[in-house]
Length: 604
Picture 1 (tube, rainbow, N blue to C red):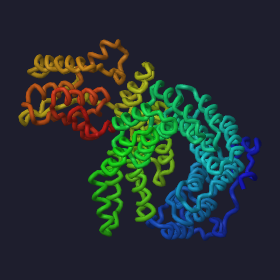
Picture 2 (picture 1 turned 45 degrees about the horizontal axis):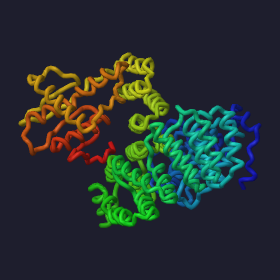
Picture 3 (picture 1 turned 90 degrees about the vertical axis):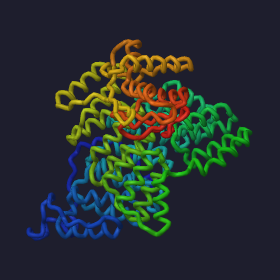
């Protein structure tokens, strides 16, 4: 039991001790004839890993060829058993793990994650704790991925004593400043019903190291302890600090509003959700119904309830997918790439997770790099950066540049500079960086006014020969594309365009518009930043489109840039004031603005 797993201080000193090889199994390499032993790099014939039986066959083949103790060949099998949720999979995973001569931290982490994974019948959090002790005794050093899994095991077992010992190990081994370990520690104390300890762990995190996940874990701790007032107070501090709450935070706050009768706060949360969330999932909608009902507004509760079917209406891709399943057709790997990508684009986190589980568990489709890339993008864009990072670390095929780049883009959205630099470093290691990767990190440093760091990253990109082409925007007028760059003065109708731009901004300012210069990565004054923002290529194209097309048809703009917050808000206001539909295709997706709202529901 857990009580027998007390972690001694001496075990932390053994981390640096070389691990002695475990006794060889019956099929030891030394006892095999030389002509039956293949080197680790020799590939065995591929066996589909779509079922537990398939993994067993592959494992038997590896034993026959002398590859079962080679990490390169054992890890995909270990990950398949540990992470895909098959009944009996963990037993085989343990057998594969035991066959490794010198398992590394990655192998221990994979097995630990399997033991604490949700929704599986053979979950054994106590086994994850035993693995951690074995890891220390073997002299294998834990890494930043290890402690979130072990702390999760402690939370599932309500093992407060062991969790506190783990906190001591975290400090002793130097992981106390890792944001993912810090957030896991806050969550652990909260799930163990210790809100004061969760708050203490939160307060020990330096202000600049806190993330949305840190605040979310704290709010969840207060909600579990039914400290509703503290939850609302912390939520207010979170917003004042400039953090954008994720859905988990919103659910915690709505629960507090329901119990406190805080109708106005709850209604404000609802408005924020409608502005910032593409789809309200069932949990969020239920929380809103509960909040409105408990605050005495039965009409609003009924309105949210009646709208639940429409709000949960899935994209066309999801409708086609489930129609295919209902008709008895088994989706293949390509079909799941399409549906997971659709979920990612629409921000359908719950649906994406459900489809990913159904793919693995029901249809026995082994996830490939594309599936993992879609899931990393989905979770990261939804603000679950810790989960996205963990998923990258557990990819059986090894991390890909697509996955790290998805995480890097999400770090820019959610302002996680440390993780962005980690993602860039991994892209460097893979030899897959491009100019845009460096620009993202440089711009993030610029927003914190760390101009030397911003300049250093841009210089490094140039030194590596990674040149970035200037961004442009183009608008179609009478079948001809007119292309603009920022501050463009080359168009034949430049004077008319800037006059139109002036009129547009004047009307917007009359309605209370103020330019958002927070994303301008220049060390210049506010007035110069406003000048740069005012003549953005997208605004120039929009002005020329309004100037040159009749009322009625949409103004269509194509841009090589990703839509900025400033341009998005500006375009929405223009569509409202000028009563024109504005269609903008940026480098990631289509935005259609009508009467002040965008079809992306501000999720892009």
